[in-house]
Image 1 (cartoon, rainbow, N blue to C red):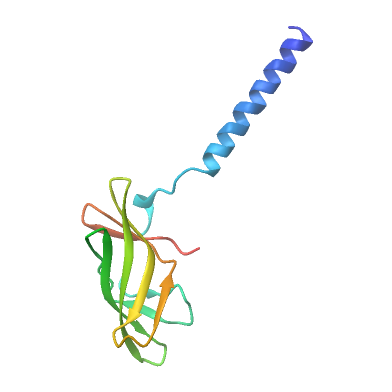
Image 2 (image 1 turned 45 degrees about the vertical axis):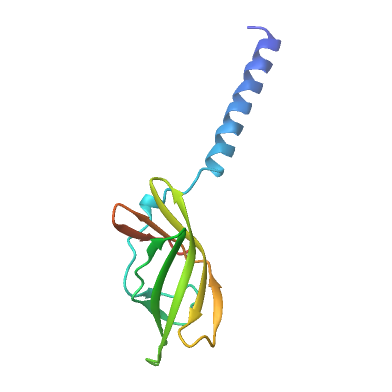
Length: 127
């Protein structure tokens, strides 16, 4: 084998390995492998706050649910959340959440995501 052939083969091999690495790095998450949504679960905001009663329903391009946020001292706050609902991997991905307290005094966003497929609700793993 000539030096030119060896260099060409090595270059092709490096290009193939690089393409495979880039492809794997950009691979889409497998939402079906996320853990099942638990009740209650820790708030993405931390501080020992537990989220309960989360039961998202999909309608009109949105995922919506009422829920409670329970502080470590036992104080309970009632809230609602609305996510964008997008078809994904044979189910619905709920993301870009916007929450509001039941009394309207507080609002915010959440990085929390839920995937719904075949009657199962799965939550994004903690990062």
